[in-house]
Every structure is written in structure tokens, then in C-alpha cells.
Length: 327
Length: 312
Image (cartoon, rainbow over all chains, first blue to last red; front, side, top):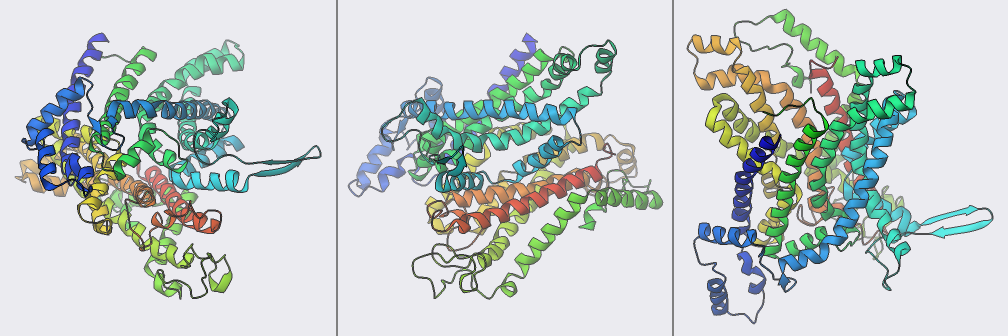
């Protein structure tokens, strides 16, 4: 197991180098390259550009530039963000908590609701819940995220909720943008702002995961050991959760771990629509401002996350399922 | 559509000397029967055919011009039903129904073109890797892994950003978007084809073909590829839906099809700001995307069930 883990880690290194070369090459051909933001400034002359180019080392051959970038990147120097006038690490550090908050909550909501729906659908096949889960999954695959976000905004922010209960008229609408009100606000305010982006992100993931849990659970329900447990006279709930769920979850863990880094880039759309001050929106603004260093850092970090979570998913599978043997 | 079933994994139709016409025809009927049983898949196929017809006959299905501003427009979007705009107009008075029809042309053409590119590229990479194996395979698969590890949407945005910045945003036309998405989505097909080829090249009919003196190219094209078509068809079908979604996100974010050209995504680009005055302009283009992609996904699911010999 340890040998396997070390070998996989060593294999990941050339893969990551290949990825970074691809990314560096692509970004290198960005017009103007890292100096693009300066070129639009009328006060900066051609001579200034030439001097900047020399000072930043951009007149050196591309492979040399790549190696120097790699060396700096590995030592934590991710470059200068021209758009924020700070270092890239500072700019990212400032935005990361908001993204982690949004991602973490929507991930937790999606996993818990998805699991419950999936289990119920597997235990009661051809029931209403089962049909709902299957249909819902297809809608989840086919839904444009940004359109779902727009529709939710229209329903809950623009129109709001208006209903009568116990003689009171309830009028309530959810904020459609930002993380807090202008005055700041407390925890209740924060939650109000979280609802719509979390629902948007969670709905699409849980559509996928409930279908997956259903399939996995259904496979387990038909195994011999489940029948044995039932024959021993164990209560249904105990069989379901102790024997069934534990085994059914193993592939689910893999698929959810593999999806985690995708959330990071999926945040671009959701954060842009809900004006959420996180990494996704930072990336989108960096794109418009041609902030070379920030774009490169974002792409490399997301690729590293993908490779890392692939590895984690593989190792977790072996750890959860003793039947899996590594050689 | 029916051509998709002409080659079936069950039948191995082009397997050289072992060619049994009866068996092939029978398997083909079985595939078609299984697909027909899948009612949602049939509905999906019908919806897709209708959408394609709507796109082809767009100019005859509406008497409005997709880019013309209605003479009645006075700064306010026209509501559904006003002056013959049965889905209303957008914020600058262009007929929504017409733009959705013309948008279907762009969105569907992009999706089909990208899938053609991705299938060709993916088949090429996968075929070379699977047929030759060894170091070539190792190298090509590492490259595939690398491309798979880079999150697609951010990379697409950066590439479109580069194209937009090199000349002008208007250069982000149909062609550049097709090429950019196509160059970044061949990886799944490559893996499928490689997997199929790795097992097919060990089969007896490959050996037989080699024994009678067939060259590599002939073996690949005449004997291996026809047997790998089924999984490619399923993947390609599902990817048509995926590309429609991708193009819509790109255009929505302003890095895809540029105004005034209508694509389903670009129609939604201004929808957020105008959501209070023209909610219909936000609803209908999105519905068009949802319904079309849903139809394609149900169709792809039905195809998979029909083609996969493991699913009964």
C-alpha cells in the first residue's frame, strides 16, 4: 500500500510537469504576454515596455523562462498580479476563504441530500422517489448552470416569496448578489446570501450523486451477504446501514472525491452570477484584465487539485475496500 | 439515425472472413428493438429531429428578421403576444422566437462540428496508442491524462480570451470556437478507442488479416475501427449535449459567439441585467438549451442500453 502510494506520487510529478508546460506554452502566446496590461497604458512608451520586458526576463528563450517560472513557483513565489498590485499569493489568499465556504457548504448539502435520496430510491425501486431521482439526474446533466442560477434569482430575489400563513402575510426575498449586506451583517445575513449560490451548486451535484448512490446501493442489496444478514434475523435498518451502506459507499467516495476539484472551476460561473467574492470571480476578472500570473496560478492550482484528488480517490478506495490489492 | 446501428458490437460485421449475414441482420434488429423499447430515448430523438428541422427551416418558420429591431419598440422590451411576437422581444426589440430558431442553427452546428473534430482527433490518438502499444501508447496516454487534468472551462476561457485579444472580440467567430472546443475534448474518445483497440488487436480476425498480408492501415480501417464504432457513437451522442452546454456558458460569459449573432448562450448574455423588465428573454433561450440537451441525453442513454451487450 505504502509502496503503491509512493509510486503513484512519483508518477504524478512528470504528469504535473507536462501539464505546466502545456499551460505555460498556451499562456505564453497570449498577445503581449504578461506585459499586456501595461501596453494599454498611454503613458508607457515603447522604450518602457522594452525595459520592462528585459527586467522581467521576458526576452530570454521560452524554455529558460519556463524553468525560472517553475523554480519560483515551487518556492512559493507565484508572481505579481498586475490587476491587484499585490502578489498572486496574497490575491488568492484574500479570495480563497469565500470560495471554500461556498464550496464546502454546497458539497456537504449535495452529499447528504444525494445519499438520502439515493438510498431511498434503491430500497424502494419504481417508487415515486426512485422516478424522481432518475429524472432529476437527467435534468442535472442537461441544465445550464448559469440559467438555473438566473431562474432561482428570478423566483426568489426578483419576485420573492409571498404567502399567507396563520393570518400573517409573509413577504420575503433572498439577496441575489454578494456575500454580505452593505452594513456587514451577522451570521443570519451571511446565511441569507449563501442560500441561492449553494442551492445552484448543490442541485447539479446531488442530481449526479443520488443516481450514483442508487446504482451502487442496488448492486449491494442483491449480494449474498445482505441475504445472509437478513436470514440471521437482523433488523432491516441495521442491515441497510451497517452492511449495505458501508459497502455501497465505497464507489460513491471515489466519485465525490473526483468531483471536488471540479467545484473549483465550476465556481467561475456561479460566483460571477451571484457576485460572490471568491476565486472563480477572481479568475474571471483576471481573464478580462489579462493578468498573466494570476491566470497561470489558477490553472496550475486547479490541475494540481485534479491530480491530487485522483490519487486520493484511488488510495481511499483501497483503504475502504480491503479486497482491493495493490501490486 | 438508423445508420448509427449499422455496426453493432454484438454483430462484429466487418470481422473479415467470419461474416454471417443472418446473425448480423438479427443483431441489428435486436438493437433497434431495444432502442425502441426505451420510450424516453425515442421521444428524445424526436425532439432532436424537430430542433434540427427548426434550425434548418428557420427563415420559413418566422417572418421576423433575427437581428432586426421591431418598429414598435420604444426602449422597452415587448411582452409576449405584443405585435405578433409570441415569445416577446429582448431588451432591444428583437423577436425572441426568431432568435431562438436562428440560435439553434449556431448552437447545433457548433455542437455537431466539435463532435466531428473530437471524434476524428480522439480516434486518431486512440487508434495509434492502442494499435502500436508500448512507448507510443505510454506517451500518448500521458498526454491524454495531462489534458484531462486541466479543468476544461477555465482553459477554454483563457484560449478564447487569447483569440479575442489578438485581434478583436469579433474574431471569436463560429470557426475559432469550434476549433478551440474541439482541440480540448478529444480525450474521452481517445481513451475509448485505445481500450477497444488493445483488445481487438489480439483477436483472431486481426491475426488472420495479418496472415493474409494486410498492412497496418488496412487492418485498422477495415477490421478494428468498425468494431469500435459502438462506444464512439454513444460517447459522441452524449458529447453533442455537452458541447451545447459548453458553448452556452462561453457565450454567456462573453467569450463565445459575439452579438448580434444569436446563439442560445449569447442570447442570455444580457438576461441578468434585464431580468426585471424582460424575464421572458431569460426563460426561453435557457429552456431551448435544457430541452435539447435533455433530449440528447435521453437518446444517448437509450443508445447505450441498446448497444451495450451487457445490458439486457
